Amino acid sequence: MHEISPNHPRYQSLILREKMAKAYQEGILADTALIAHGRGEAFDYILGEKTNPPAIEAIKTGISAMLLAENPIISVNGNTAVLSAEDIVDLARLIPAAIEINLFYRTPQRVEKIERLLKEAGAKKVLGKEGDDYVPIPGLEGPRSRAHPEGINRADVVLVPLEDGDRAQSLVASGKKVITIDLNPLSRTAQTASITIVDNVVRAMPLMIKELKKLKHCSRKQLTEIVNEYDNNKNISKTLDIIYHHFKQDVQS
Ligand code: PTJ
Image (cartoon, rainbow, N blue to C red):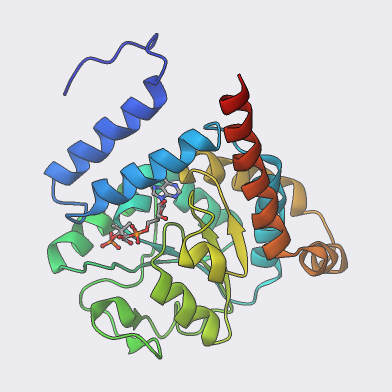
């Protein structure tokens, strides 16, 4: 570990890097997790490393959809667990929603480590463990197609931060509402999901919890209106406009 000065202009970003590097050394993360993180960092940089208005709108809609759901669930992979374990547990408790481990690069050792991380963060029940029952998600092969019968399989709304495109597509195709958090507005996941929050998971999750506390008092009718008024393609276009203007300003200045 290197000593990082809080005065460093990229302090937050460097702290997250160190956290990810340590988790990789501990065997919690997949071999390519740091590449995925780096791609996220690049997009975060061009988004101004802040939560932009379209993300706020998507957060509000995503929380409304989770509150309206009969069986909401949060699908957790290695990167999300390392970056946001406490927030995942808090959000799941407050909605309330189930938590299921679902890994792209699944190994029994990683599943156990991620389960431990979630339990240490306060999770009472975690689905998708090694010995657990599972059914395949139609259209997907291998370990990443696993869906717990009481979890993702029967869920109507799934929050899947940092997801891979195939899986997001398959979940949508099986009739589920998919909410994702992805810094890349052009990724297949971002383009396929029902509600795409283009933001860093470390900023989006606390904001989701804050929004939940506000929306919890709304009627089902009000929540339904929020969901029905939302247009994901328009929302992503607004984010792309922000990126475009960001570049344009930089070129002109
Ligand atoms: O733990 P596993 O085995 O399930 O593997 C997880 C990874 C993330 C390695 C795997 O799903 C993967 O390879 O994902 P991709 O296809 O690289 O997609 C990751 C997406 O997340 C990319 O679009 C990144 O821009 C985005 N991303 C990376 N870091 C963040 C992020 N989005 C939000 N917040 C981040 N911190």
